[in-house]
Length: 301
Image (cartoon, rainbow, N blue to C red):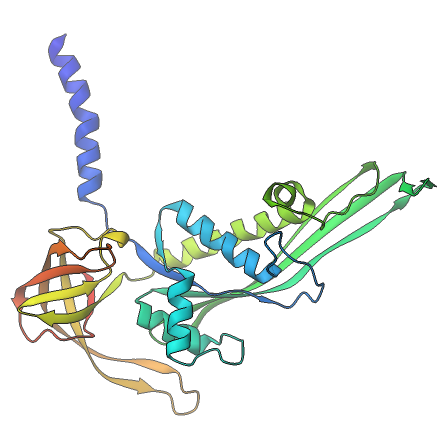
């Protein structure tokens, strides 16, 4: 009986250890602030536009999923300012790719809110200014979303997501877009339609990222130590072994200006030996090869 008890306790522990050992680093994504093209003049309870609110909602869901490392908005804004990108107020696939490449992300996500409104209909009268009768309200949310390959600037996916939520019955008139806090929003038709749209975008991201290749980058080499990104915040662990590649001259399409990639050659392999304070970078040492340089690409071995 004792042997069975010990054995039954050992199995879950072994499964946990195997799971941890086999865990791979998280892929990195960057979500740019969505444009607001709805032209309705609605504002989030925080004072921002629907574009601000929906991109924030998507970031929250990505973080909650635990599948990805999501670049902080402040890092995106900093790179945009340093590179003088987005001065017109609009993010383009080219600028998103450039920022994403500098941040070391596998996928840049852009979006625009095209619809964010409510319609009412029904029959009934009014008693002392209060509308009564059989009424129907419908909230509509539309988002155009684009996924950009940060290496080539190519648009991998362009999708229009539309969601509607409605209710009808004998009720007083309500302002379904007059929310003052998150609870009001979550319980509104607008909130439910927005949530459904964000969930569909999450499914599109999961599908796209399944085929994306995890990549890191050599930041610098000092005293024989190779500093790389990402680090612990993306699931990189001490003992991980990666393959390093160097890129040749980038091939640019003269007609579109879009990168067509570049020739790569293997430099060698490296092993993670420590972490840099803050968790966003790691330290590694060469295992095989030589000639490692800043900007080299790091991939799973």
